[in-house]
Amino acid sequence: MPGDHATTYGGQPLAASAARATLAVMEAEDVPARARRAGARLTEELLTVAGVASVRGLGLLLGVELADGLDAREVAADALARGLVVNAVTPTALRLAPSLLVSDEEITRAVQLIAAALHARLDQPEDAP
Image (cartoon, rainbow, N blue to C red; front, side, top):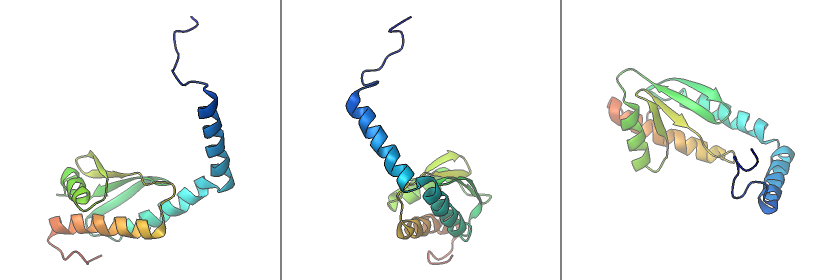
């Protein structure tokens, strides 16, 4: 029936205009290709870190499977204490969902923080790859 499903801002002209402008920028800058490149870089860097068993996902939405014996909740809490927001989606996996605008420097820093959190649990020096 009409009115059964509605939203307060659904179809609101300003919101629709903002969405169209966002999509235009995303198309002009080929954001999907940008996300693929950044995701490939992030995956490649993560795979060099001791304690990372595998990385899966698409673009910048990634799951990091940890090596046996590592608790994703503990690693996520340690990463947060170091300034990086990730979340444990299973007892052994972290989810990473960085901004589509993430820079190479931010990717490198995020990997360093994850590595530090993992190395603390593996009894390795934090500067080890």
